[in-house]
Length: 292
Image (cartoon, rainbow, N blue to C red; front, side, top):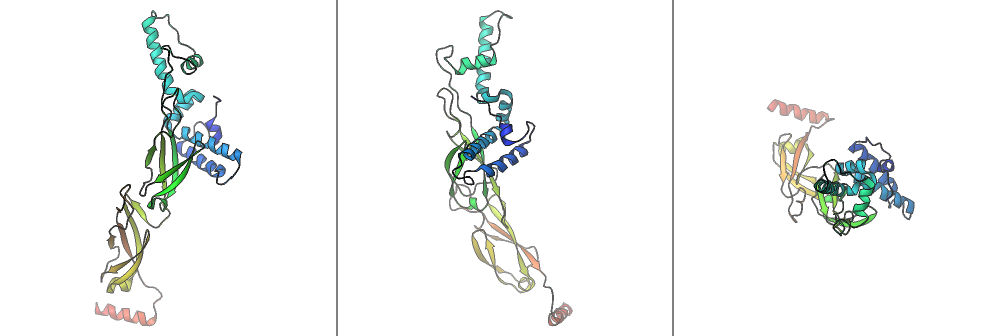
């Protein structure tokens, strides 16, 4: 296996922080994405390398193995386990002080390049892949399908409505191939939800504010407000104070994997004081003040 310098691919140093890795990956992924470079085989190859580098370096455990074992990082756990078994066997079979360890490369070759001591190859589960999928809040309001490119392969996903920021879902057997016929690893997808709407999401509930004019607040009436998926009419009680919060039941965010269930929408009234009053309006307010 040819050694690939993942740090060099992302253009970062070996001391790069998690945020620096994430920033470098996103910048390069946008630049070399197949949708931006249709038919460009070189860009497609570069995009695959960028994803592979991110999958390793964004995972602290995999990054540690890569820093220590280089191109053989995927077999790090298998190597350590087999090495311990071999050392134990040597201690049982040889006098103290007379044993010696095999060279790393020779030992690794004997493990994965040929038959084991018991006449059969050792099988190991493949490594898990880790990917991040960035979606908007509007995207996750409804169940939809999305194609995700991982390690150069396109995977068609059904994303349930209501997934949350930072949530991780596992897709079995979409990770790296196993060793010597072992099972494939899994694909772990972490969602990064970007909210550019006027609504604040908290679990399954949504929060927003609307302006309420002075006259409606004092006398009551009906107003039309925006919800996440349309408009709704609200009745305003007379003498409604500034900062009053009302609840629209079932107008919040969908509950994850519970079809037809929604949270609530909470609306806070912001009282708007009229400005640029005419002489007549000022006179009426003065009269009203005298009555009070």
